[in-house]
Image (cartoon, rainbow, N blue to C red):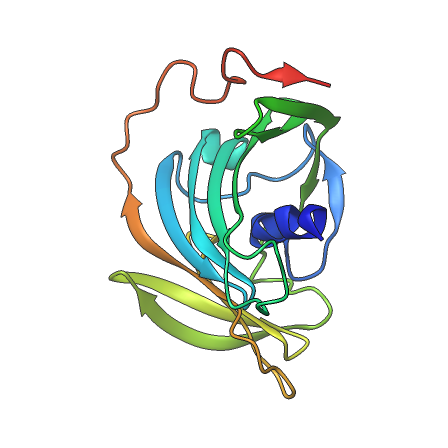
Amino acid sequence: MKNIISFIPLIFFSISAVCQTDSVNSAPTPYDIKSCKITYRFINGIQQGTKTIVFDDYGKKEKMIASTVVSNVSNAERNAGDTTHEMIIKNGAFLYKINLKDGAGFKLNRSETLPLNLDALRPGQVLIGEDTVLDRPCVVIEVFGSLRTWYWNRIAIKKQVTGTGITTKIEEYAIEIDENYILDKDEFEVPKGIRLK
């Protein structure tokens, strides 16, 4: 159960309308702005927390840090209240997934999800309309009637799982966007002291 719980916070980091991958070198630029820092809140029924995403080079370099706590779990579940603190770094041809609580991580070859293309929506994607999140204009895309995403500059800044039969609240939304964030010189490097397996 604990392994499943530690995976769930990252679902919105990697979920896309329809996953199509390409090599990192030939993939289109993910976002329409060069760099940014965005802080989110999320809840998915059994856990809630925050995550921060920092990116540069129009999304070719990206770091996500998520902190979660298990909530709304049966009293019989001993993992209630457990927390996770994880980091994912996308830099060059590699992706690093790091558990910040135990200081260990691993490296994977990176593949990219193709970015949003409003001129050629993928199967199952439907343009719902326009909306505003944190005073930023967004286009709203729904996928197969079950996932609704608000995109600003092709960056997902709000997501909601919808549809019939959904009884658990599952959503993620930006609470702060810093377009003037100053990147550290080692922003996208694996932190010192992390043991890579």
